[in-house]
Image (cartoon, rainbow, N blue to C red):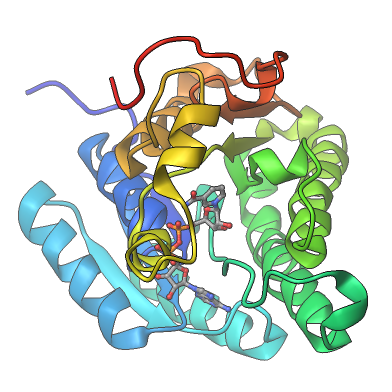
Length: 268
Ligand SMILES: NC(=O)c1ccc[n+]([C@@H]2O[C@H](COP(=O)([O-])OP(=O)(O)OC[C@H]3O[C@@H](n4cnc5c(N)ncnc54)[C@H](O)[C@@H]3O)[C@@H](O)[C@H]2O)c1
């Protein structure tokens, strides 16, 4: 029997109950990692973990926590590491989309603060909890979820833009700080991915699917598995010479320079 590349390692995915996080947990399980899922929806974290364990034969467990809550993160981490073992791979994925799409001065400041607390605070909390054991083991992989909005400017989404830009600073700082300890820290910056949260907005007419598909050079939205594939690559033990990188996985969205000329059929 061949050993899988992540056999004997434990991967913790925040926001792993659904969407990109769930696809990532599945991809890491396929590589042999035991899976710890932390999600604000505790029931779904547990059911996703059970489904992954049944499909992949790895050990998996879920715990409920709001990643913005330091004490809740600490409790969830202790429970999961106690059950599965020290965390060797951390994916800071938990996040929310902008609740209101309005100019900064017309939104309550609480919207802005909540974005930073969940995205940056959550990633800072779990990195703080997981790095000591990674240093002790001389191995660690941390992957943070940024966004095309961490690279480009888009009006009326200031909190999300600042949070996703901040994820790049968190990535660089932790990468340099931990580089001599076998720990890599990278970020992926997805383009538009059709997860439930955005599908719902498309269906309610709050987001124009075709506008964003047309703006994306490959002419379509991405799939959660296409982000998970890159995260899994970065988590691989053989990816130890890649650190501090922000990897756009966006169908070319951020490299497109033309003002919107017709470049061919959409939704190819
Ligand atoms: N979908 C996209 O187009 C896209 C693009 C760029 C970046 N991203 C980023 O990817 C990540 C995942 O997005 P998604 O589309 O899969 O979203 P999703 O809503 O499908 O999944 C997010 C998961 O995070 C959990 N979560 C939300 N807030 C939480 C909190 N405070 N504490 C713990 N868990 C929490 C949710 O319950 C859910 O399971 C997010 O960080 C998002 O900003 C998504």
